[in-house]
Length: 483
Image (tube, rainbow, N blue to C red; front, side, top):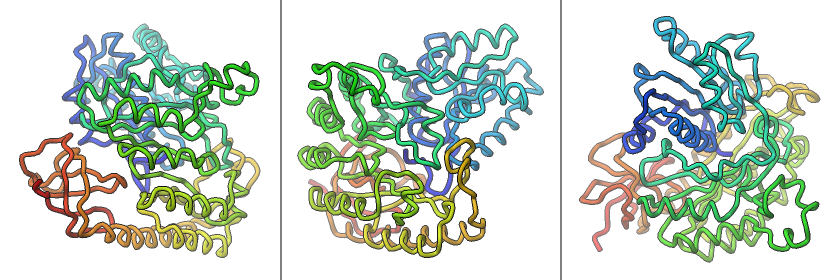
């Protein structure tokens, strides 16, 4: 799952969440303040949490001083993410010294990984709730109100929250997330997700289509279909993906896969832009690529994590593909969807990585020339296969040097890719005012690249034709084309 920020975990997107809270505030007897860390799935889950607690009488607020309940939806993908959360919890506990009635809770992957340790040993929080236990939040909060600590981190085989109408905290009224799967079966050796979010299970496609239609009717113009691995989407009536072979012949024959779902959504909301994240290379099939090419409202952009350019390292990571297979998939994407934007995840300094392995990563980047990427050095995560069976033997200074070279090369390629847009007229969906200047709009094109241009009489949610006149490595600059 791609993260919010390229070089680390962003604490919270204050501008987008602030705009959304103005729209989505639920009046209630008590106030909920929630911060989201890490991947897009966590931001989506926070919307589910706000909805569940809204039904229990909690209104949302972005003013910490008026909050009765503070929740941190956490990430465990890297140690830095957990340290950021710990620092934030420390600051909240200082507030609690003056306001002992304030309740503090940890949600998400860090809650699932550490479980009661946060309650018993570190004593930083009042409740700990895993990703599959959000429906139990009203009961857990009640326990805390009665003076008891509360914890529920039981992983579910079915939970998808399909019937929960999310409170849109993580959007600006223009774009929104729709979760389509939960969990992951891939068992990459460096990743905690299968342990913190459980096994893969998919959501009823009809509920996904209905949510997309509902968002369109409310004025949203873009949705992102979310999952740890969207290409593994498989609906055969419910249950874990690993149990598909045990289903009836009729259920298997009528199963809905990701290409089917993508087409269903595209047809249901033809005026809505559609994105999806995240894809795993070993699960992406050409049928998905053909569906993208067939529908103009499906964006020409794929986030395609690779993690390393070395087949040896990919095998150690248990990625399920090698260098050549990944490059072949890139070739098919370029052929079937000309001009498709492609981004990546990359890890520097995985155990045993040699300089030759690192150079293979750089050469793969030269081959693909990604539009942008999410880049990190390896961080050992407790209880993963890599932590249990592999020595973290790459010195930190070497990890940082290799990461720096990866980032520098990506900056070069991003600028090269962006220059290809100059002098083109492209359709941009306005998402809001530029952070650097109130005189400019910002939005994105179909390749997911940010475009900034002077404000006119348009408004957020409008599609505008923009001629690209200049660029940086991160942004396209342009001017509106009068039609």
